[in-house]
Image 1 (cartoon, rainbow, N blue to C red):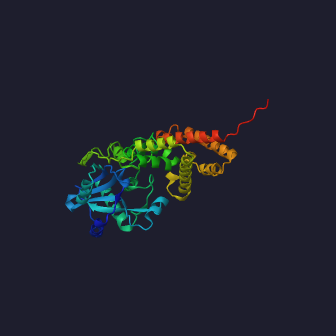
Image 2: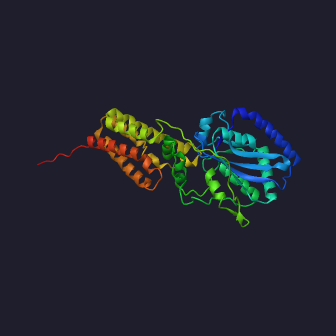
Image 3: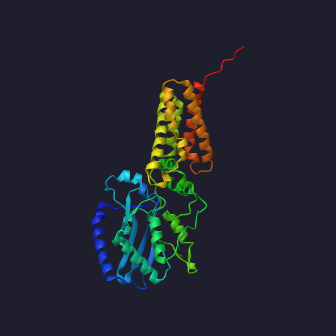
Length: 380
């Protein structure tokens, strides 16, 4: 969904922006031959490209303009990059590239590129062109990235709708699916990324996905939108086509996940209980912290803490001190939490992926509960 502002391109971008400054100064008027289109880039295998990318192309051969406006740039050299990303304070921004350079980059990355020309009047094309250039010149193109609410796709939708003077572009497909269900297929060949996002995302991503935030969702919606009683983007032209390729990893897959959990269950020693519940409890504390600390609303209200329960750390405290009464009580409390979690999870997309963890926790907790339950003597 995003592109990196690479060092080798920075000098060119500065030059090209200065080139466009001359456009603004001359107040270029697009010709009748001008074309405006939405560019949809295929999925990549890096974390920042798993969801594809959206951009806008302005092409006018009469005025020698063929530019791609891209709202998905960020700088890895930003001070405190990781904390800012986690906090939700990382600044993204727009850049403009010559079309030939843009397409060369995606050719190098072996990623498909599609184009949908917008059938809008010339004065709206001009308005969009001016809004894009003004956004770049004024700094309005800088924005605080939000996974669903503010990204390269939503920014493109917003500026096109602004230029058209109405909310023409809205979501037309998959509105009956949750955001979580929509996202799930994108992690098909990235198992631990799928697991990680499944457990760190909270209740926001379980809402119905009525907002356009993914490039392919926008592409599908554009094909269905009517404008002035005609299709807004009747054709989809393939500019680049590559067969999808996916990395092969001996560890980043379902089998390694199940093997590790199976070994933990088979080993089943007391120190394994310590390690397993410590890890689950610490992750739970991390999820709670991120829910309060981060401005990413997707991380708030995370019911997955019922599985990654911080009370497991309290259980370990009494378990290590051989306090049978409180060890038993806390084991039962955590089992009850898992029951609630299973009920909540019943209709969620990530049910199957967390079930092995859920069953492992239940197995260990039942063992600990039975071992520490005091029998009531029977007096005859």
